[in-house]
Length: 335
Image 1 (cartoon, rainbow, N blue to C red):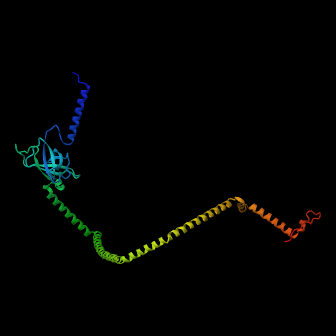
Image 2 (image 1 turned 120 degrees about the vertical axis):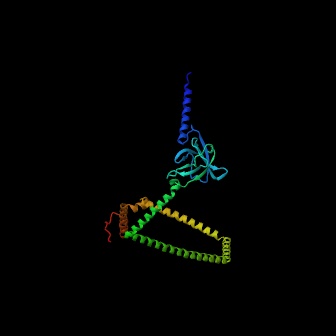
Image 3 (image 1 turned 90 degrees about the vertical axis):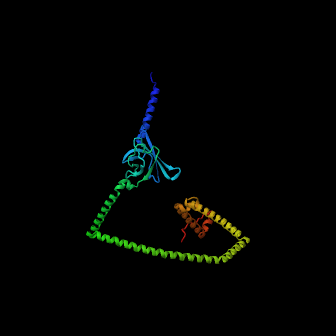
């Protein structure tokens, strides 16, 4: 029988999805094709333990953290579910320690086994294990090596201190620097003492200021009646001014002044317009002011008219015998 193309595509899709799920779980450290067992531990502090953190036995991974959540019956406790391979025999009395695996803060659960369990002595799946959290230093060096590392550290620090003291003694400049540091510390101590005294004096000044303020408020309280009388007098004065319509008279005077100012402004505007026309040579006055040739011609004409008037005054007969045959010759007038 021939398999249809759609069936082949469906089978291939199912296989691809199954491989994808298996690969995802495998990368998380869990093989879904292999049976496992679940153990539970309770902690006061999980130190940022998360899902999928490894579960190890002497550094060898045997499972992963399945889930981390608060105990619903006691919110101060944290429950951790551990997925451990079926082939790992977990003895009764095993302790699940949360350790730090690196300087970057990685977390893992280390299963600390007692002597190997015998047949029928191993806890079943779902059994509670004792939980314990190790500090950073114990996780890095181990409890059994902690005393050794501390003694080595103490020896090295002693040697470093002796070396520094010898260097200070042998080198005058370093010795002088040490004395300078001591002098600086003494100066800082003196300055801090002065600051304390200044703060004490400031507190006394603040207390005196508050006392003065209290005195001022007392004086204001005593003068309260006088202030009330002054306010009553001001109210009476304002009432008298209102009754005599002083404000209305002042407003009327102000209105008249405003009208006068408007008229003055109009006259100034007209004068400004006339001056602008004169400057622009508009009209007779503008031409007289700005046209020099017209001014000179007008000056000559006025001089001629003045000469004619003077001759008419000095020789009136010359102009009365116009129709006579005898005419008197013109003579230049004397200055």
